[in-house]
Length: 316
Image 1 (cartoon, rainbow, N blue to C red):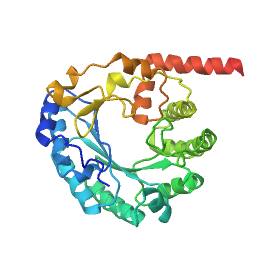
Image 2 (tube, rainbow, N blue to C red; image 1 turned 90 degrees about the vertical axis):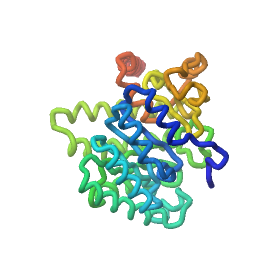
Image 3 (cartoon, rainbow, N blue to C red; image 1 turned 60 degrees about the vertical axis):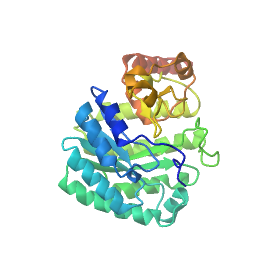
Image 4 (tube, rainbow, N blue to C red; image 1 turned 180 degrees about the horizontal axis):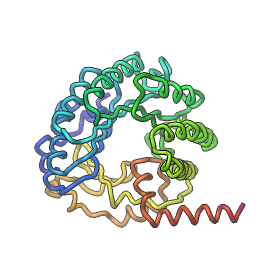
């Protein structure tokens, strides 16, 4: 299905206008569908790299069309010579389990072929990072530990392997895919066990306790959000904007568009945040790392989290 068949997508020239109106960006993140379907993906990356002083570019890809993905990533590396590139592939099961969740025959075999080719490319470009993300659903819930072990032992080893759950608040997710909060608690226990091992292998011993604590805090926030309990306040308004294919701008993909970039001279700074968004944040329960992890870094949210733990301790 072509999800954008009735959408007039932004052109390369329009992306150029957007990039020239931004002084700097910490990261450029693409979303899907499948970014490599745009033949000019590398050129879009180059525009933001040259105009916005980008240091990191993150591109999720489905791993289906190996050659198209390989060409796109190779070109991004050439056109953005000093940026770190993160390519994330879906690992939702082994063999036919992955095919079932993806709804595509032979998706797993093609995924692994793509992964191996990207790993060959990574040997030549140390700034290329290739990793997996697993979306936990009722389909693969019982085999998550098996999947983690597979990602740990695959050679060469991926740069990272993250677990995500379908956002319970999203109206786009079918109920028969959503795991229960009790299932999520079990997933977090499994994740913490393997995450600790990964942290110990990656970080200097001095930082290991701090990094472990941060991941536990983040997972605790995710779990409570999944139960519709807000611990921290979302700060997305202050650090992120989502530009959709047709130019609509959102602060979060689960909220209404706050404007269209075409109607504001292709300048994000001209699109103001409506009060309705700020009011909605008060009842937002998000498990999206793009919003949660940057938000937890704000001192006010560290205070909120600390007070939450203190109150919980006294109630116990």
